[in-house]
Length: 224
Ligand code: CTP
Ligand code: CA
Image 1 (cartoon, rainbow, N blue to C red):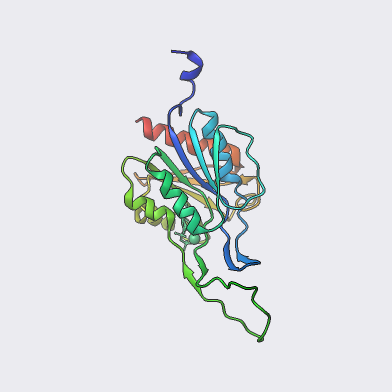
Image 2: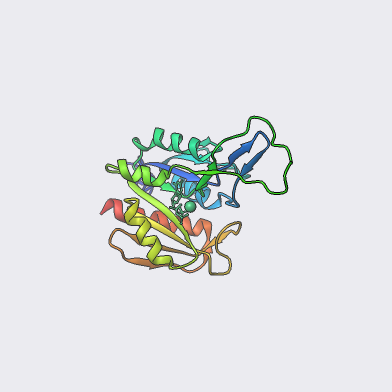
């Protein structure tokens, strides 16, 4: 076998990755969204492809472009669309990494016409979206399932609870406390927590470096 190919540790592995925000329509011209840039998920998709993986990236609305032709990109807008796309691809995947900042709530009804300004106060009723990650945890067979957690208090405790509750193999805790971490930045400070409940702390790094740290953990676990 070719020596160069042996150096691609993820060759033949199928990755499903979600990234970016979702937009939940209020009416034809308005939506509820969030500040997720998608950079973390895109960095993981590119790094996995560079290591030989076949990558499907389900992306919410972001202003990023992919440099890698080996990533198949599926563009969606809403949490419901991301749910459908993720379920279409999960069965064929070896590893699923859900880094998207999915809206937890959507408007209960989408107005068919632009809502007119009337009274002084306006109440919008919201309904929970489906938890994509938890739904994949429910049907998981041999897939290695990775989730993210964004916490502002009791960080590790909450992340461990999410790992258990959503039946994950790994959770990536994103720390918002440190400078240069989180939304919009090019850097992140993460803690990895696996099924063994062991925590691995990393210093602030670029999202590209963080992507490699996450993939290295996955490679070690799935080849063990
Ligand atoms: N997630 C998802 N579908 C949703 C909500 C969240 O797939 N409808 C995924 C995210 O992509 C992330 C993980 O669940 O990998 C955790 O997201 P987070 O917002 O930290 O946790 P929640 O379970 O939504 O709980 P809360 O926001 O109340 O902390
Ligand atoms: Ca949430």
